Length: 327
Image (cartoon, rainbow, N blue to C red):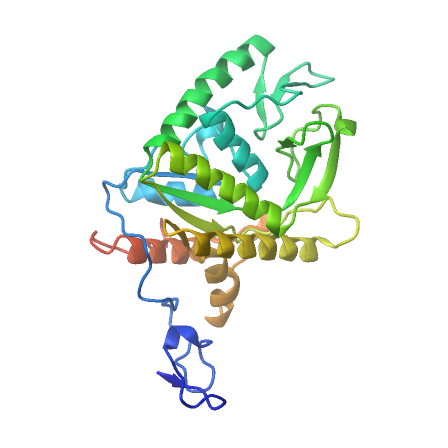
């Protein structure tokens, strides 16, 4: 137990003190955390997840280890990242819209985009979900709402991965389209209708509270595990900040909102995947960035480190074998 020279009567537990500082043990590969983690799952626990790029890694590892992962719309290409065809969900505004159309009325003024060159129908609220005709889009979305509702209403644990704070918002009705900065479909709708801005802590927390209220009404027994994606922004739409500063701002804002969210509810818990990657890996003398063209992602050893801790912490009653280099 570490002692504070400034306040000698106070005794800190090792997980309360920065690893390796003064007499505290150095980082040893076991991320320090309080003994009470709040969540315990087994392979029978029904788990759903949605969020940004890192959510896909969580889904993959849960399925690999034989946990009961809720997978609706398995035929749909937009379902590969999450429990239903939500595609990647980068911001809390789009997350909130998913819960609103799953559990109630949600009718934005502009429902579909028609791409000007190809004529393809695009769902602007889900990333790169395309159709040949509007009738096909309407039918598929009606089916999707049922699948989405079923996934969220049946989950015993919901994992939300928060990604970024940059949004494009409809100037008329306030709806937010799914448009992260990146090398994606170069068509879309009338962007003059939408305003770019950076969302702030209070409104992200408000979105999370709305999600909690809807889930509490329709699935009151569900617990929520929230995390912040350690994947950096590939690019920023901001003209007043470089991409590194914009990425730091996004993650810091979401981390603050997640902390407030978890502190406000007995059934909400925070999993420090972001800290495991960006702080703890360097303490171990390791890098966490991926190589190649997508170097803003985290590398595979870091993903394995994070998910090994996930299973050690939250599934203590299940047999545990760490992910090896080949997985």
